[in-house]
Each structure stands twice: as structure tokens, then as C-alpha cells.
Length: 639
Image 1 (cartoon, rainbow, N blue to C red):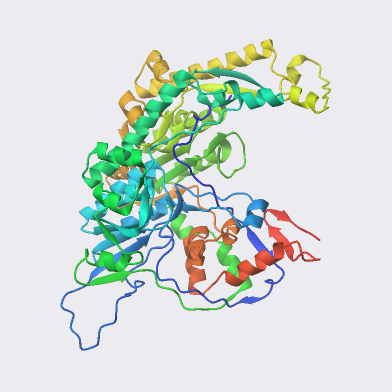
Image 2 (cartoon, rainbow, N blue to C red):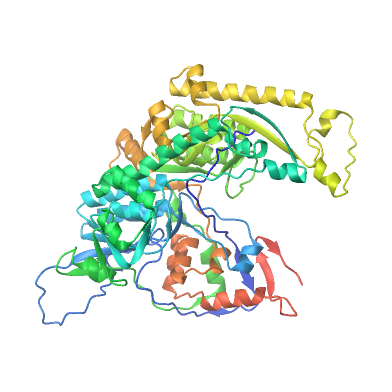
């Protein structure tokens, strides 16, 4: 039985990143002496953190005998771009992505947050310039947390300035948290309101001869409607519109409060959607316009008379043997993931919940998750745990297995549940333990319901001349036959099982939310809620993110300092989808390698240009003999 996720479409996340190692015959047993390209600004602040010694001054050098009139203000440039996710995961090898140039990679949102926290504690730093001129993908829950972290930077005495060119909702939301918002006069704003798109297949299924057999508990379990209805039902449409309004209100109110304008003014901007730079200034979204390409010049006047720009410093060129390179790339970043002293672990449960014994990228697999929680229970250095849930649901059995183990963890160590972008259906199920539950206003949660579905293609197969003969000792053995729908007896049997699981779901929620089963039933039935709605209805305890949870745990444990470690550990290694994409070299190294590996490669002047050329050439079919000897660990290619 599968507690399935609600229909999605509010936030679109791109997937990326597979970890693999490509060994070419042209590279074996050779020494790599590759030049490093100079970069003046960090391309991925989520994996690199400049220190004062690494900082460079791009301003004109002063003469030795010239006395500065005032001490310059140190300003860190923070360029943000790309797709940020809570816990990046590698993907399996995708040949299509390899041949077409790669897929979009993921960046670590919480590494970026940790970097901002280091800036907050840097007493010599006077300000931060956020370069938001490139496309950026952040979900609503992440934007809520970033707004709080920017507020802490300001309270620490750092002046924040944002630079925009073409701005989306994410960029406007982040810029609004700054003291000053600058925009290129040759840019624009695209500020749409929240939307949800659902594709319905019923008419197409009737046309080609595919039928759906469905059992469910909950009339609002919208995941089945695309297969049963030609369009969205009225009751689901009305409920979804209310949730959509709540999600949009959270975004509007956040921007309006930060920019000191009314929510109505922001809504008017959304209704117009496309704004010119001049209109953005008139609407209060932007403070000043400046010529395109004048970011530093335009920002400098807001930091004082003299500014010392801080950026990443390029490393000198060094040589590295092939085997040393391989060792660096395959090593785990042990120093960053090791627990010691007063450690609080952020346990990421991200993906679809499934039963199984082996890890699957993009899924929360029952047995590996239980094993990981066991290790946290036995580790005396782990003083508390924040369970970060980003899941649309999945298997009810796997959800209960994980929930039971989380309950054991909460009984042994202080534990807090943090809901990210989505914690729905099975994602909500696993949160039903004796622990405080936090969600952001933009979180999608609830979907308390159960369904099971099967598609049969008997009519389609007969239409194309395919006949399936199934030999079975009884009708129950043919329950999953491709060409047959569930019989009335099978439908009744499965409905009873779904109802039983749904009743258990209601009891779990009632016992952990201080509600009666009937009260929960009024909120369940597959209904999906925003985090703000769930808070007002009593389905979550507080509004806040991982930063809030860490502060609460630190206070509860009475610890002056804590070490934050994220689990599961991030894997190391080169990411082929990134290598064959169009990303900059500095950005690739920063995002696909662990910290120690990336630093080692930069220190030795490693460049990807020649390697990329070799990889692309080796994949071209024009060669009479294959140049690729081994793709490891994904597959062997022998010719």
C-alpha cells in the first residue's frame, strides 16, 4: 500500500549529479600537469569558504609611502547560482546525459548556510555583496531559512547589498533580506504567483485502451485523479486553491515585510508579473539602478569610502600523478563528517520511501536508514538529532519501520523533526514520534491518506495483436497480470487492507498531535496543507527551519559550542554529468568533490579542459575502435 504524494507543481526542482570515475586509455599511467584557470570570484560558495589570508584585493595598489585616510571596509562577494538542495545525492549513470552534454547538478544548501554562518562570525568583515546575477533555484522552505540567516548577518553588523540583473521570485526574496538592492538597468523582474499544474490521462487512456484499478482511503488523495478523471474534481480544486493561496501568501508576506511595502503592492507586482528595472524601483522591490557590469562600482558607495573586496584566491600550478589524483578523488572527507565532542547530527530523509536492504539514490530505503539511526544511537558523541524530512511519501510498511526506529532515537536522545519543502503522506507518517515538529510556512505537508493502483493494458495489447496466456492455479495468482483489471473480489480485499492502514495512520496522528481520531479525520482524507495551515490546524508544533532546530537543541543541551554533522555522508568522486555539462571549472570542482579533494586539486592546479576534450572525443561513434576501456563503477565496456 502506498501513501502517495499530493500533486506537485509549486516549486520545480532539477535533479542532477551522479558519482562515477571515468578511466581513459589516454590517461592511464601518465602524469597530469594541468594548468589552472584564474577565477576572480568563487563560483560555488556552498563548498568553498575564503579565509582572510585567501582574500584578494582587486582595488588599485597603493604606493608604499601613501597613508590611507581610513581603514577599508572588508566586503565578501558571495555569488549564488544553480540548483540548491538540502542534501545532494549522486545519480546512476545516464548515457543520454553523457551524450547530450550532461544534466544539471545539485549544490548543498546547508553547506552554503554554514558558509554564511562563518561570515557572520568573522569580526573583521564589514559587509557582504550577494551577486544574484545568475539563475538560482531555491524552494520556499529554503528561502525562509535564508531570510533568517541574512537577518543574523545584519545583527552581527554586516551590511548586506544584493546585485540583480534578471530576477526571479527566488532572487527577489533573497535580495529583499538585504539592506540595499541594486539592479542593472538592462535587466528585468519575473515575479509570478504560485501555480500548480496537473496532467490528466483518462481520455488518452480510454483512447489507447488502458484501464486503472484503484482502491483508496480519502477523497482528497489527488494522486489517483489523473487516472480516473478527465479533469480535476471540484472538491480537490477548491482545496488545492486554498493551499496555493497560503503558499503564495507566505512568499508575498516575506518580501513585503523585508521591503517595507504592503502585501497588496507585492500582489499587484505578481499580477503584472513582468517588470522593467524602472518599474521594480517604483514598486519598492529595488533601491537603485546601475549600468550593466558595474556591480562593484555601484555597490562600493554603500560600504564606505574605501572597500577591500574579498574573493577566492587561485592556487599555483603543481603536478600530480594519475594514481595520486585517483586517490584524492575517491577518498572520503572524513574530517568534515566525523563526530567528536558535542555533535548534533542533521539526519536527512530525502526522497521516496521504499522497502529494501541496499541504498538507492533519491530514495529513503528502510534497512539502510534503520542501520544509520542505529549508529547514531550508539555514538556517544552525538548529543542530539535534527531529522530533516523532504519526502512525498511511499511505502506504508517502510514508513512504519523507519518511524519506529526514529521513536527509539527520540527516546534516547533529544530529537526534533524539521520538515523541508515537502513532508507529505509517508513523509508525515515518519514524523509521528514523541518529538517537536517544525515546518516552514512554505512546506507542503499532510496528505494523510492511502491508495493502491494498477494499470492494465489488455485492450491496447489486443488492438496491436498481442495475446497473453496466463497459467495459474487460482485467480489470486493473476492479480498483477498486465492484461486484466482487479476482479471485484480482489478489489474488496485490497480495499479492506487500505482501510486498515488508513485507520492506523489516523490513530498515529491522533496520539502524537493531541487530537481525537475524528478530529484528525477532518484534516485527513488525503488533504494537503501548507506549513502555515498545518501549524494553525495543530498538525505541526512550530514554524522554523534547521537553523531554529539547532538553536533549540543547543539551548536544551546547555552547550556553549556544537559541531553540526550531516548524515548520510556525502559521497566523493568526480561527477560525470557535471564534467560533460557547461559549468565553469571552479564550479564543477567545488560542487562534485568533497572539500579536501577539491582543495587538493586546486592546490595542484588541476584543470578540466583537456580531460573534457578527451572524454567527449572518446564517446564519439566515428572512431573505428573504442577509446573507452572502462566506465567504473557503473558498467564495463569491452571491445
